Image 1: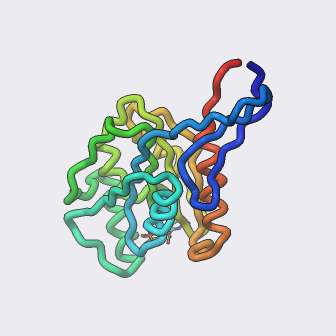
Image 2: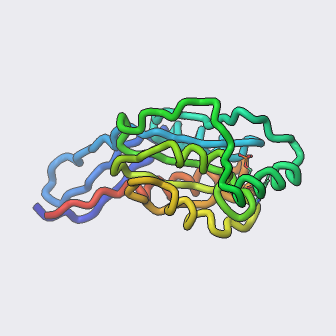
Image 3: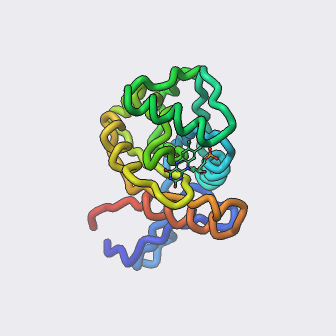
Length: 196
Ligand SMILES: Cc1cc2nc3c(=O)[nH]c(=O)nc-3n(C[C@H](O)[C@H](O)[C@H](O)COP(=O)(O)O)c2cc1C
């Protein structure tokens, strides 16, 4: 059967569904994307905002990473803490048990960019988590320079099939542009390829 094109629908209500358009005049075939887990850490709310939009789009499950230590509110103090944690690889203890990723088909991991890379609480999560061959996609929120974020994420995501990551600048917060960029990214990473 010749497949003319693939149309991924994130329609008005943004359902996590893929429709394959086919030339043989049969009804479009819908395929459920499966179970989506959105894991994120957020200190000041930007990464959370993106996670919540993704949740609405995919009807997925949200999981917020929390640390035992409480980072101070001042960015420079967090940066100093993060520098020490990164240099010593003495990552912060988490106060939340890692979710059972085996129950999901796609795991999306969101992190703020700290010191040009993945925020240390998310590195703690990655150290605890074996993705066991699952599809994983990362996003970074940032203020303009994600540095080595995606390289480090790739190194630390154990047994993940990594999909293309995305970055979201803080300046998009609260704007329609942010929704659009998230949907475009989801469309990109959820394309399923199949043979004719
Ligand atoms: C300690 C610290 C370090 C940061 N380092 C960077 C950086 O290297 N590059 C960048 O683009 N933004 C950096 N930022 C900005 C954050 O990545 C950005 O504000 C992020 O969206 C915050 O996410 P949150 O609101 O979910 O905590 C840094 C912020 C903090 C607090």
